[in-house]
Length: 231
Image (cartoon, rainbow, N blue to C red):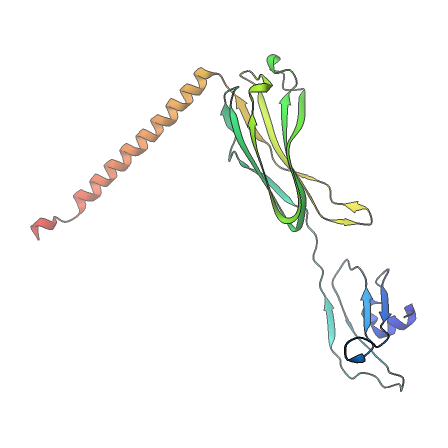
């Protein structure tokens, strides 16, 4: 169909760039000619369809056809393990997990680690970035996991390792793609053994105090209950 003709048939699509409309030869379903269209929309639009046959008879329907468009949003990505920044020993083995989500589809997800180039100097200004794990697919959600052994890095107390995740979605049009999205960093802070033991003692003391308060609360509730034997 020429541009002037399809602008008359579907006037709502007249200004859509690159539209292609075709008419079948009538050998399809019920041996009737069929109009096929191919076009790309940036915004929602609506149109009527005006048809005229060889006898100059037109369709009587005033039905309006609406085409909705969905904005392809960038993906979201986060580090889910560890759930918060952690203090670790230089020889720690840390489980890592990242999750990426997208309204259409996630193409790839990978976990990065930024480590000090000179660990012994405790210089955090020069960092080396390495990719620990990569997952590729076309799903609305991707999960990447990695068990990170820090011992080979020869870290020293005071060093910090930053863990981030990077996701890209499946959007691609005319060679244009959405930029990759990087998560907020999860910080692994290296401490010495004495500091680690002190932190563990403080955490255990906190748990003990919580347990004591729970026992005292239970006793108070028991004392407030009526004496069953006296009934």
